Length: 248
Image (cartoon, rainbow, N blue to C red; front, side, top):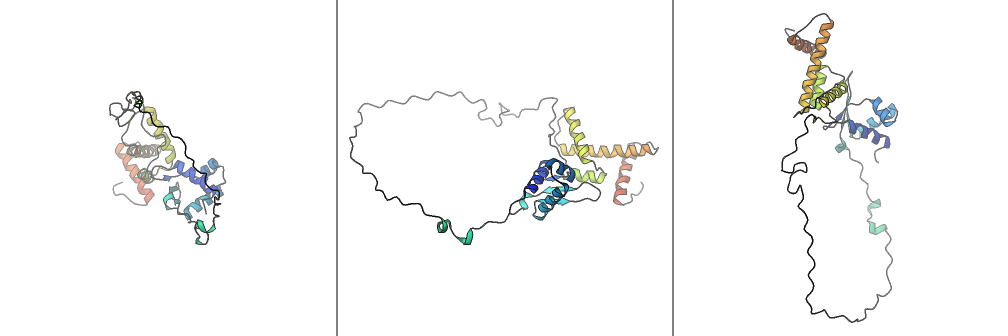
C-alpha cells in the first residue's frame, strides 16, 4: 500500500517549510490553502503520516504546533512473488529457432600490401583548461572567491534551528514566523556577512524580548533601564513557568 495522494501533497508542503533539522510549524489553514485541500483532509493526512511514522507532531497548548519530518522511519510493505514462484515457473518460453544457419562459403581474401601503413594524423593539441587542478571553478588560483561587498550571505530559506525555537518559547515569543522574516529582511538590507546565523538569530530573539518587556513597563508608567529590562524578562519567564525569582 503506497502513500495516498493527499498525504503526498501535505508531506511536500511540510518538507518545503522544514529546516535542515526537519522541523517546521505551518498552520493547518495555510497548508490547506496552498495544497487546495480542506482542513479536515489536511488533518487526516497528518494523522496518516503520524500512524505510519513519516510525521512526528509536537503539540504545545496555546502555542505553535511543530512537525518533524521522519521519512526514514517509514517502511512500506514488501511485495512478494505470487505463491513463491520464480519467473521461470510462470513466464512463457521464447519460440525456438528451427531454421538452419546459412552456410559459409570460401571467398577470396586479398593479401595485405607490403607497403608500410600510413600513420594516423596526430590529434590537435587542446588549450589547457582554465580551472584545471583548481579546487573550485570560482577560484582560478586555488582560493575561494570572496562574496561581493554589500551582499549578505544569509540563506533565502533561513529557519531557526531547534535551539532557537526553544529559546523563543522560553522568552514567550509566539510570532516566530514574523520575527524570522524581519530578521532575514534586515540582514539582507544591511548586506553584512555572519559566520553563524543561528547564533545571530538567538541574539535577535533576546533583543526582541527585551524591547517588548521595556515597552510593557513603559505602558505601565515605569521607565526602566537596561538592568530593569533584564529583570522584566526574567519576571515574565518566571510568570509563564509558575516560579518565583528571589529579589525580583
